[in-house]
Image (cartoon, rainbow, N blue to C red; front, side, top):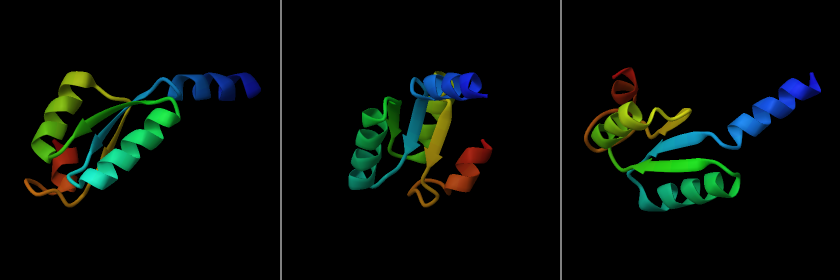
Length: 79
């Protein structure tokens, strides 16, 4: 229904998204794009920090790099 779609879009425009990414340029671009779209963007540079931040902040969505220096992204998501 149109009302359901509008409500979902309104919720998502205020959603918090955690980006776990070790590449500075990729992190900067992702953060800017998400903020421009109305999302709150949180940033973590490694898997350890990403898991800790996800537990503390409880984001609505996590964008996880799969090739991080300290831990495989798949392993971090399973935590």
